[in-house]
Length: 202
Image (tube, rainbow, N blue to C red; front, side):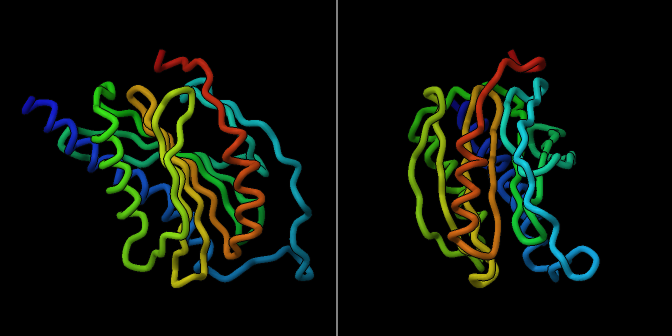
């Protein structure tokens, strides 16, 4: 029992860090000045394309070819990698997925998972966030959470979906300055997310 409690708090800390790392990169985009192409003309609308990661076990639609980054997180469980793929619709709207492999298989109760999701949500809100909407979700019977929030004093709208799937946490984030446009494209991104057979996590 003590070992299970220790794992619970380790996982709680991991989830909070994943939420933060997933949102900081694209929130910085909103806070920075907009950039356009030559002659002040924005880039043309993209053709949304499918992206597949057999390594991380998912497929999803991105507006453009995604960029990839890896962040190292050190915690009580040791060194853990958080792998991110993110794509920009334009200079103000971005979509990203963050995948964190846990150091153990998820064996927690639904109540414990909801507590961890609450903590991750609260950390993602921070001091400048306002929770707009929230609901419990599932994906192939795996528990998750969707929530909408305003950040940067209302300058940014963020829609997040997070799932616990075996020993992985998948966090999908859509960010932009206007709720209506973010929501329209966010559902295209979020609803396209599918699990596939993973080459490293069977």
